[in-house]
Length: 125
Image (cartoon, rainbow, N blue to C red; front, side):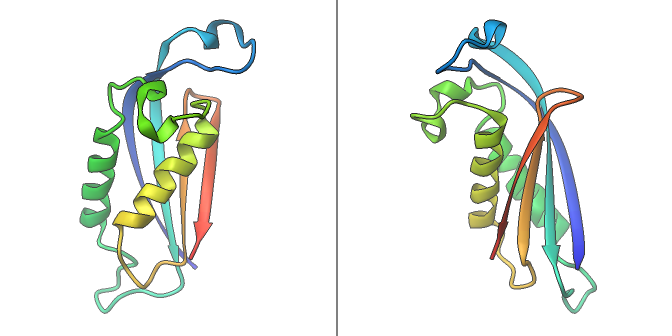
């Protein structure tokens, strides 16, 4: 199985709801690091799993929707606690809808909210 990964950084704000998490209940920012891992069992005629420029373009467009925003105020998080678990799923499913290739078998999004904490979501297709 081949894997291609692309990373990006961006800043967004949020506050957690539904529990007593101390300072996390107050609005604050994170310098998120996002890693997208694309998996497939074969390459195209050029020896690529996917066009990395295409992936970068879609990733930049997607991140642009969240960069410098308060996640709680976005429709994607309506009714949800803006946890990194939910965030990884939202980003993964949005990328699956935008990246078109018949070579991919799975896509995983990993998102760090700091140097030690991350969550991921992986979807096979």
